[in-house]
Image (cartoon, rainbow, N blue to C red; front, side, top):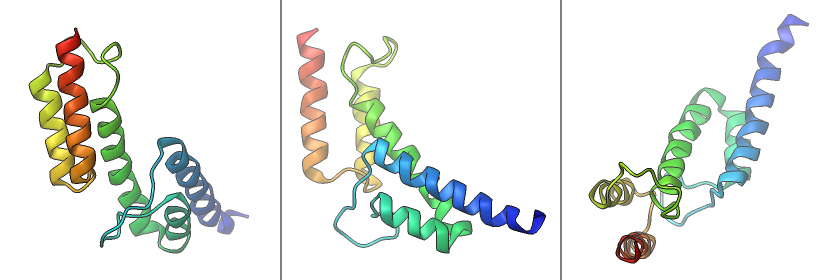
Length: 118
């Protein structure tokens, strides 16, 4: 029974990756690279290459979480976070390839518009 434990860990963590990627809205993006995968691809990668794919997913997950917090509605953004730091976070995500040029421009305009409306 103890021999099955590593397989169960891989299976359980792969299923978590699939559910988490779907809940975060991670989608397959065009372009080269290992990190441009959708939830099903992350699941299969974790099943087959767990030692590489699971840490890679955690890095990708962190980027998506940062992008989601940078584009949160004005009511949910912490008061101490100012426009400059939010724009810096968006620029970092854009330079890392998490956001496309169009997404970056749209989110930047939304942030500035939200700050002007306050």
